Image 1 (cartoon, rainbow, N blue to C red):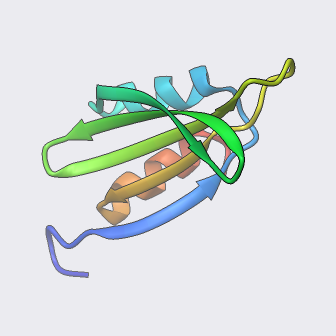
Image 2 (cartoon, rainbow, N blue to C red):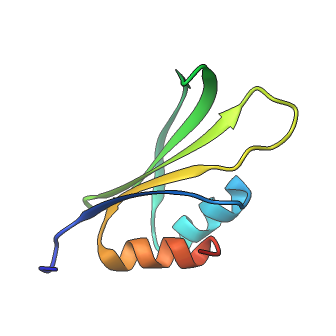
Amino acid sequence: MRKGEQRLKSISVLVPLERVEASLAEIGFLLQDSATIVADGKFWKRFLYARGDETISVSEEIGDAWPKDPIITICGSKSTIKHVVKGVGG
């Protein structure tokens, strides 16, 4: 992989959103925006994080009484993907 080349990866994790947020903050990603969306017949809260030209979208299903597992989509370097996966127990 050439320096600066980015990859796209989506992962489902079995950890609370707070753990995902802490992992992202640890490597310098900042929350840019959030929105509530409807997809697949469900309500989702989507958070957009950025660090330079890398972005990470975290989606959490909302509306039910019990917590749901967030899904993370990363557009970033191999080292960023590796750190996030490791940070959330992958």
